[in-house]
Length: 625
Image 1 (cartoon, one colour):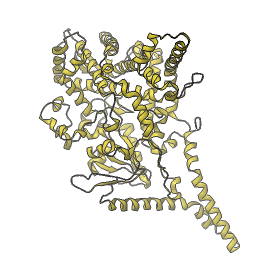
Image 2 (tube, helix red, strand yellow; image 1 turned 180 degrees about the horizontal axis):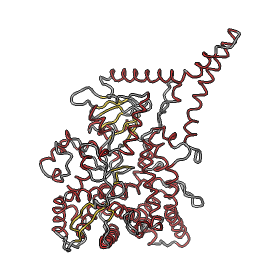
Image 3 (cartoon, one colour; image 1 turned 30 degrees about the horizontal axis):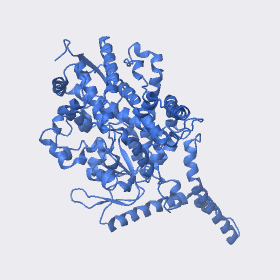
Image 4 (cartoon, helix red, strand yellow; image 1 turned 135 degrees about the vertical axis):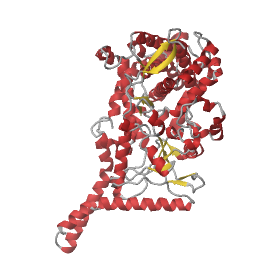
């Protein structure tokens, strides 16, 4: 259905139901005229055409509520408390959620709902239930113990319900539908056999030998930090978020494709209000265009998720994600075509000469793209015929986003925390220097030895969980979650969207202690570790269960490597408050959000709005401590 406006698709999917209503009203008018020999009164005809929709909707909503309450009682459970709404269909709730995403602090207004109603609450929008939870036992059920009952995008059977479905949200592959333009059927947007296939293809590549191979990290980290030193010497602060985004993009494409996109070659950005910051040629550099389009596509995907199936009405005339992804695909296409052509030429060369091209074969074995092409013969996995245009980049985009964005987000917020906690920075740098010295490249064993380093990384991952807010699944069957504080279990109806937040869960004081709002790496070392050891599901930086992140150790290694190089190069980090965009007083929020000196936003990962601007003192200079 490419090219058809999303709004038309939405209307077309419900048009048959509206036609049935109108046909029924027309048939009734005709029967009246036959029976009574004259047309029905005007008021009756108008009512027959207009009333069935709101009447059917009312009956549908009431029936669904009574049915779910009955099914809950039959299981000895209760329904989740529902957010009170003043407007029909929870339209005011929808506006509140959209406003929170656009202007509120991260987690708004769901954090408020949890304070008022408890860790699990029904955020009902447009007559559709959304059971939102921050309870670790519920998240454990979604990700692990009841894994098969909650899926991302599997097509669900359409239940027989009233004709009022013209207005209500239609159950089905909601999340898949929202993210398809961005992720397609890649590993992060698929279920069942397709998901198992993708995961089985990528798992072997994340072996210890590959993830502890630091050559790629070193090349791009040295480039990034050299540019940072030069920029600081010019007298300008550095947008650390931009710098580390380029580092992870170049490292990720090198790791994936065997060929970096060289986004660092464009240079680091200047502050917008500076003269160099007005350079339009810089903004139009191919790597910058690619990164900007990928970021915009992710932001739109998360904003779209607030609307369920109604996102097509908000993007009535065009699919905004598709426009940005066309830019990204034009960037990646040539790399993928080269790999597939290489595979074809290798096979042809082996058939014609009987000789093996070691260099080319090495590429296909040493990169994830080559590994995927080798495993799938190219066509089955990438849906690509050598003579045609590349049509399916799903898995590459999925892995690229995971390899680039989550690591960049983690490093950004970790350095932000170091800028606010110089005592932590000093202690971490002391560990780095005592372990690897001021210039030696760290090894895999060095990284494993630095315990405080791991605690600092974990502390950052706990306070600013990098993945999008909230995450979501859909129940494929009726399910029951454990009750709260000894209360009755919670009933989850089938075909119900179930958003959950690791971000808010990892900030709960009843789970992490009264100092949960404080960034303190020692909580992962001292007696406070008891909170985590007694309940491991309160800390889920890399997901859990069958979908646990395959690149977990790869990410830890890349983050740790870059931090070592950073602290060997610089001895102090401070927020450049004269350039940093700060949250307004009205949007500050409560708890940890009230402490923030940056504006935290999210698309598929968390990021700092307008960048993280820092000044850093060079090691060995007069600023060295």
